[in-house]
Image (cartoon, rainbow, N blue to C red):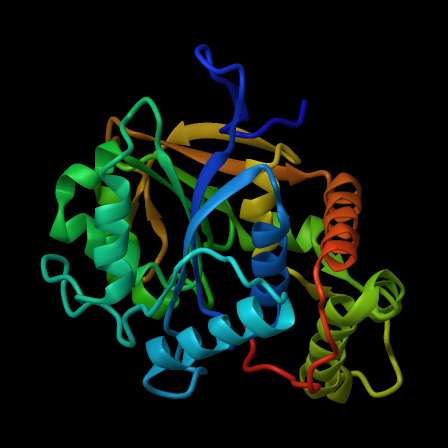
Length: 322
């Protein structure tokens, strides 16, 4: 049965539905999947998005935290035409230097402050779809945050081996800090994303290219990426899909995944897992109902464009391979 780790709750006092509290940390500007995840997160009425934070990547122009912040601001204000929106925070531009020293940033400070109104019974969900520097820094700045947040991370290759080629690689120490903490962790791995979240060239075009200005922008991003990184390697072959990796954690919060709980490993310096017993657990996403997820995504995309004055913006293409 597909279910999320956090559901909309009925308030005993008011009878009102409580929204799922979310902060998103994204290395937008690196690839194309972040754009889809940002759109999905901000357009999901089930969420109370309390902040959106930039994260660094080596493929983002330095200083990466500030460049990502500017890209986020453009997406939220211009692409999505949101006159009222969550705070946009600049994250660290470099990974952690060691496992005890935080990278002080606007994003890390915001996360600590925002978490203060949450508890172990009502956790703030932190979607980490890039290097986890700011999340790890928040833990180092205030270890008690482990009792107030839950981290949902797109990363690692598979279970039980671990490993990674991008998000974890960009700050291995941050991943180690998070796994060593008492923070509840949910992981959407590269394997489950490859199995369920690939979009072929024609499939992506059919889904979004004629779906208003936002859909056209997402298609422009996808097609520019595809011609730059996929098609040159395959000549006239359009059969290879590209993976919209980062939507996996959004799908989980919305109840479109299956998962298993395992004993939490530790993360070694080569990013493989050490399965020496830790006494902690980890939630590992094993399946995504992509049909339901994409139908939900498109429904929200259509509704937003019907209710907001979204205009066509210049065509752009993004970053480097994940």
